[in-house]
Length: 198
Image (tube, rainbow, N blue to C red; front, side, top):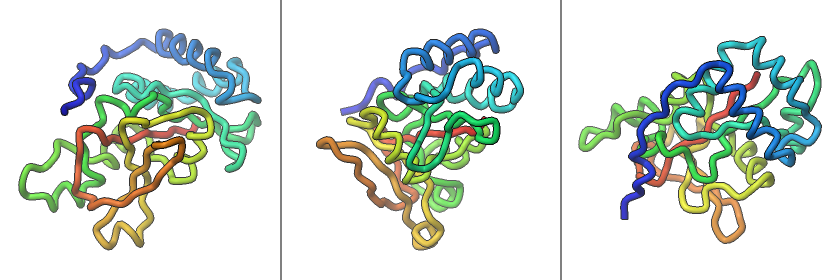
């Protein structure tokens, strides 16, 4: 059965003010994701880094619902002038407009029959973002329940990728799972979550 949400149209670009307003509303609605951060600090970082704002606009426009997060167990995202603010796609399911992608350019070029339109690694790079590491994906799952019906490609170690594979994760039965697949595979229910450091 096809997932109709994957056929949504790309959202119209938001102005900087509109984007900041959207991010602020989401930030204030989900304090458990960033208990030691305050919006004044986050907004100041965003306004000082226009390239990161542009990346967040792309993440928002493709259904990612990015939010600032703190991964305490990884020492990432905590409030400090020395620490970047970590933004991650927090949409309940993998972003709707970033699905049906293989893993990277090498996989895309190797697939001669019925290739997908794009790859996850390249799509993230064009947004100025990166795929989540496995540890980051697992940390995200401690802040909520994500990918209950979908799955997301994650950054794959070279030793796995060199053998033709790539990794993805999801959440089922109350647990987070990491799987492997051929890097050239793609599915309507698999996309990627991105992260940007500001």
